[in-house]
Amino acid sequence: MAETTASMTELLREMGQRARRASYAIAALPPAVKNDALERMAASFDANRERIKTENAKDLAAGEKNGLTPAMIDRLRLDDKGIDGLMRATREIAALPDPVGAIENMAVRPNGLQIGQVRAPIGVVGMIYESRPNVTLDAGALCLKSGNAAILRGGSEAFHSNTILATLMEEACRAAGIPEGAVQLIPTTDREAVGAMLKAEGLIDLIIPRGGKNLIRRVTQESVIPVIKHLDGNCTVYVDEFAELPMALDITINSKTHRYGVCNAAETLLVHAAVADKFLPLVLEALHAKDVRLHGCPRTMAAASYVEAATEEDWYAEYLAPEMAVKVVDSFDDAVEFINHYGSHHTESIVTRDMVRAQAFVRRVDSACVHVNCSTRFSDGGEYGLGAEIGISTDKLHARGPMGLRELTTAKWVVLGSGQTR
Image 1 (cartoon, rainbow, N blue to C red):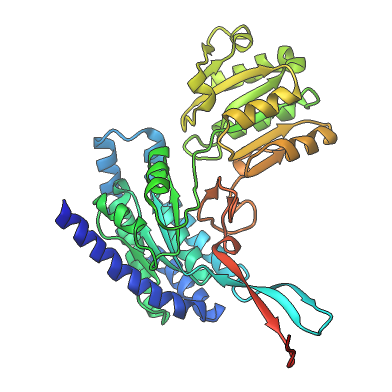
Image 2: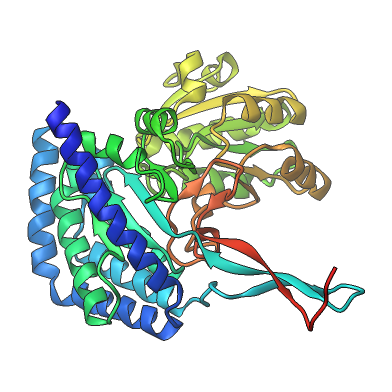
């Protein structure tokens, strides 16, 4: 074990040094060079479809053999549609404005000094993630465009898929003249690599974990490097007493059933008691027709025989499956209190015609993303206009919600003078 730990530490040291050298060069690159690399990535994904699908098939076969859930298999799959998505995301990132060097909040002081802030890369970003091979592209491409170097550690269940994508990305960077070390994937599934990564202080500037609670817990407990967490999504739809019920039905069904294995799918439905008698039969039947397993409070159970009794764990659950917890609340205040207590502070949506009520929901709900009269499924970097996202942060510092290009930069102060002294 000691030998393994030492070898992993040395591996991370070498990768970190390459990434550090690359980060200084990438920070100074003009947008055209970074965009050329991204376009080369997209073209390479297209030209290497069969290689990608062959490697992905190895992961899918192993996942099925190892009993991965349907939601996990769905996240893992890279078919032609998935490859098209990789290409589209890459080109969308290339088309976005480059945040590096943007000047913000420039003001002139009484002494004539011009003082403002400039967006600057973070440096070296370490990404630790599970299951979804598209995160390899999202993380690497977003880091490159924002002027950062990336060290990626994907899950063992997607090792072959991640490896081929990272290889193609590295080749595209070299062809565009970008220094070695801009995008690196840790070439092992050994768990010791994560521990070595979390101790690479001075080589990695930021750790971003994206995955289940066990992964997030380990990273936050062991890391000596700043962490931005991308935790689970126990998202809620709240149907207010002033809701338009047909709209509420459409939003609930879309939020829950559009796709199950994603962090912005609704897992909990709250219904105001004033509309419960009318709304519950409609929504429960619609969910039941889509084979959604329902866990409910006593009042919800009374509305349909197929609703199971909800446990305390159900109110906290991120199912990532055709399951949903349903509760009747007596007041708006009860709904807000419930969400803030049981939710994961990811995404919540209120359905209401009362804009005063909606504004109160936005102010009082302590979540990264708060929606009014629309599906929780819109909680996504692409849907928010950010291009691809590196994840959805449930932290409050320094980024919250979908993390796009701007969130992968920091600000440094710039002072422009003409000879002033103090």
